Amino acid sequence: MAGIPPGFIYIAGGLSRLVRLLAFAYASSRVLEIVFGKQGPRWLRVSACLLPIPLALACSILYTYLRDKREAARRGAVLAPQVKSRWPGNFDTLLSVARGIRRVHIVFDRYLQEYGPVVNLRIMFEDRILTTEPEHIKAILATQFSSFEKGPMFRDQLNGLLGTGVFNADGEIWKFHRSMTRPFFSKDRISHFDIFEKHAEDVLNQAKARLQEGYPVDFQDMVGRFTLDSATEFLFGKCVGSLSAGLIYPRNSLPGQNEEYANHPSNDFARAFSEAQSQATLRSGIGTVWRLAEFWSDRIQKDMEVCYGFIDPILKDALEMKRSIREGEQSGQVCIEGKGFLEDTLLGHLVDCTEGKADEIVNILIAARDTTASTLTFIIYMLSQHPDVLKRLRAEVLSKVGSSRRPTYDDVREMRYMRAVINETLRLYAPVPFNVRTSTEAVVLPGVNGGPPIYIPPNTHVPYSVFLMQRRKDLWGPDADIFDPDRFIDERLEYLTSNPFIFVPFNAGPRICLGQQFAYNEMSIFLVHLLQTFSSIALAEDYQSRSSECGKGAGRDAQEKVTIKHHLTLYVDEGLWVRMGEAGNSNDV
Image 1 (spheres, rainbow, N blue to C red):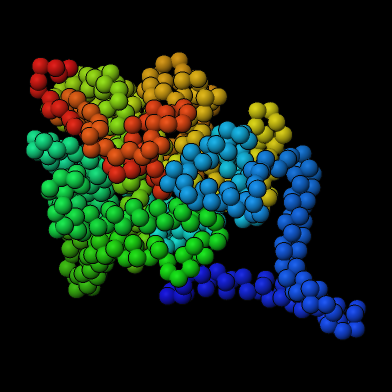
Image 2: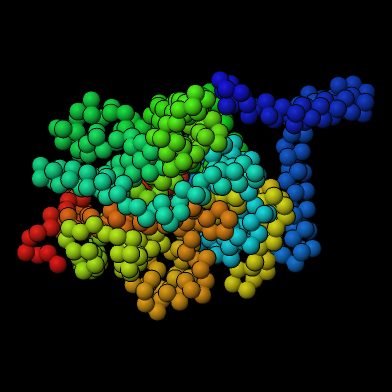
């Protein structure tokens, strides 16, 4: 259906229902003719044509509600509390979500504070049961895994971005992607740190040079380049060289006005990739009617064309190498380099097993680049706000590996405080703040705080928020709003050991992130080199962008010095601008 405006597709999909309603309206008018022996009064004829549509909708809504309520009672359960609305279809809720889609955690948190940890948003007459209850997330991800899937609505909304990749797949397709990817995240592969160290050294040298020029650095952009180059070399056998473009300058600086630099392919890719994810997130907030919001054109498509322009050469080179290897085998010649590429890289394995697809690469890049870059960004943000944590973490690094030695796998594993800092950042700033599943059958989820179980009808959208759950004071204690890595070391760890599903930044169950240890290693190696190079980190408040709402509100929101937004992943709006002091002065640990 390529080229057909999304709005036309939506209308075409609803034609059968519309035809039934119009047929009912026509039948009503005919009944009036029989009753009155003529056409009847005009007001009655008009009513007969118009009323059947809202009447049929109202009857359908009432029937569905009573059916679900009866089914819940039959199972000893109740329906999730529903957000009260002043407008039909909870249209005001839809507007509230759509307006604040990039900061929707604030909108949703307000509803959860009022209704409890599970609530039915009921947008446009469709149930959306949002939960932050760990027992529900446990059921969705693990104990009742087979009763949930990504679902057709999710696939439809994100198809333009994710295609049929692993994040957008269910069933056998998902199992196929999973089985292909798993071998490339084995301990043997992810414990070789040469790739991480090479790109960390490059980006930190560039940061030193930029700081020496008198400009702060956008740490978010910086680690986005580091993780992109590291991921593409590790997984695809070929670095895309995003660091070759250099770090960005502040927009209001003279070098920042350089259009040639701004239009570098890697920068175009980063912008388009972010915009495509933002549009995909807006679709998920709107629901099934997203095509009406993009009536004439698919807004993700234009951004993805830029992304594919960056990705396609990688895939083309891989397919060409596969062809050369096959031709060599047929002629009795063995290409050692090519064989190694097919066996040692995920991309090589992908094109060897299939013809390879660009959308599969997109899925991998979101997992390997965006989530790790997000976590590193918020780690540095927290270190800039907590110099005591920075000092202690740097002391651990220097005591374990010194000021210049490269860390080993065992060094990283023994850095207990390093892991605690990473985990505490993952707790407060979960890189994937929201996720969603769709029930494939009727499901009963555990009750909340000793209350009755919650009934989930079949084919119901069930979004869940790790971000909001991991900030709940009833789960993490009264200091849950405070950044304190020691909670993963001292007696407060009992909160987690007694209920492990209160901390699931990498998901859990059969779909748990395969790259979890890869991410821990990459972040740890980067932080070791960073803290060997720099001894102080401060937020460049004269350059840092902040919205008028930043630092307002309650809880953790009141403490923020930056504007936090999210699409598929969490990020700092307009970048995280910091100044860092080089190591070697008298104030060093």
